[in-house]
Image (cartoon, rainbow over all chains, first blue to last red; front, side):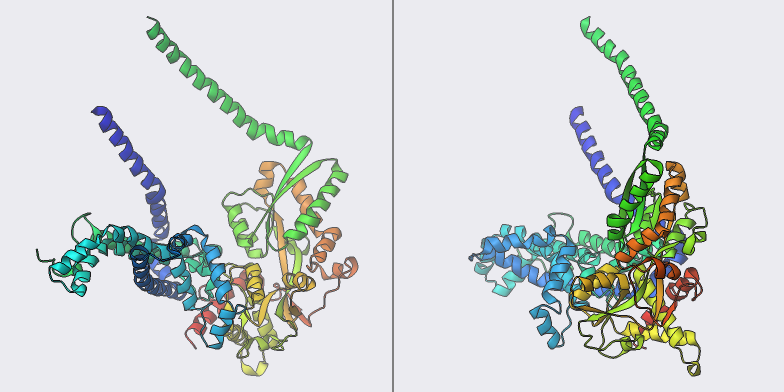
Length: 280
Length: 359
C-alpha cells in the first residue's frame, strides 16, 4: 500500500521534474531575459519594422501551411486508411520522412528541385512563377516539414472509426452528407485538430529549411526564426529574445486553444464546433 | 548477532569511503589547477586558437605548421596547437561565453572589440603592427563566365534586371565589408552638384539593395547560392572568388575601381593567456602572423598582404590594384561606420525598409 503510494509519488515527481527541467526552466529563462529591461524595451523590440514584418510573414505562411496540410493531410490519411492499392505500404512509410531528415537537408532538397538550374525551376521561372526565394518557397518548406502531423494524428482515429457506425447512420435514414458531418467528422475532429494545431506551431518556428529556400531579405522574405538568428549574430540577444517570446506566445495560445477544444478526454466537443448533437 | 555487526561495519566504513573519495577529488582538482599547467610549461606547450572560417586552409596547411617549426627551432619546445574555425561573430560570442582560446583571428574589428568589451582582452590590440590586422583582401564582384550582363561598376549593380547577391550583414562580417564598400564607393562617386555625398552614397546602397535576390547567412553560403545558378553578380571577398576561378568554376572576377581594403585582425586574449601561462607563445604567434613568411602563406591562399609596402617586396603574387582603394580608417574607423550603416536607424537598415515599402 505505502510502497504503491511511494512509487506513484516518485513517478509523479519524476514527471514534474522532467517537464520542469526541460521546458519550464528554459521558458522562464527566456521570459526573464526578455523583460529584464522592462516592458518598454520589449515593445520597442517587437515594433522594429523588420521584427514586425518577420512576425507577420511567419504567421501568414504558417496559416497557409496549416490550411493546405489540413485539407491534403486529411485526404491522404483517408486514402491511406480506407483504400488498398499497390505501393500503399511504401507511401505510408514515406510520410514519416520529413520527421526523420534534418530540416536543413529538406531545404536543400527543395532548392535542388525548384532552383533556377533545375528543369522544373527554369520552367516555372519562364512562366513568371517564383517559388524559391519568395513566399511560395517558404510555404513549401513549411509544408514539407509539417506534412506528417495531420496524417499521423488522423490515421489511428480513422482506423478505429468503424465503418458500421456510418452504415448504421445510413440505415437510420441519414444521407451520406449527414453521415459524414454527424458521424465521421465528430469522431475524427479531435485527431484533426491536434494535427492542425501541431502543424501551425511547428511551422511558426521553422528555421533550418526556410533559411535555405527563402531569400531572407528583411521586410520581404525573412521569417521570425531567421530574424531572431540575425539579431543573435549581431550582438542583440535582447531583440532576439523579445521576438522569440512573441513566437512562443503564439504557440502557447494555439496549444491552449487546442487543449480547450479537445478536452476533457472522451467528452464531446463544444457544441459550436459540431452543431447539434446527433438525435438519439 | 552477525547480522547487526555487518550493518554496523557498513555504517563505519561508508563515511571512510566518502572521505577517501573526497580526498581523491581534492587531489585531482589541485593537480588540474596547479600541476598540469606547470608540467606543460616544462617541455610541451599548448596554444588554443579561435579563427573565423574563411582562412582555415591557410592556417591549417601553412601558418600553423610553419610556426610550430619555428618555435621548435627557437626554443626546443614542442608546441601543440589546437584550432577551431567558425563564423567570426560566433567565435567572438563563444569566447565571451567561456571558450578559452589564447589567440583569436576574426573577420572584422567589431568582433574583437566585443571581446574587449567583455573584459577578456585588456591590452590595446590596435597598437600592434598594421593596426592589429594580419590579413587583407578587397571587396570584388563575381560574375558569370563571359560577363553576360557586362558588369563593371557599382552603378551596373543597380540596373533593372540585374540580380545581386550578398549575405546579411547581421550574420556575416563579409556582408558588412560589402556594404561598407558600397558606401565608400558611393562617397567617391558622388557628384558635387547633386547634393551631399552621404545622401548619394545612401542612395547607391538603396538602389543596389533593390536588386538583391537572396541574403544568405554567410559569405561562403552566398557563393554556394551563386554557384547554384542564382543571381548575375555576387559581391564578396576577392579571396573567396580567386580559388574558385583557379579551380575552373565558370565565374569571373570584376574589380570595381572604387573598393575597400578588407583588413582582418588577430589578437591574443589576455585573460586566457595569463590563466594558461601562454603569453610568450601567443605573442610569438601574433608576431609570426605579421612576418613575411606568414604574409607569403596568406598570399598563396589569395589574401592580400596587410602592408602594401611589404607586399611589393616579399610576395611573388601580384594583385591588380583598384584605382581608388580606400580603407576603413579613411571612412572614420570601424565603430563609427558600422553604427552609421547598421544601427536600427542606420543607412543600410533604412535602405532595406524603404525598398520593402517600395519607396
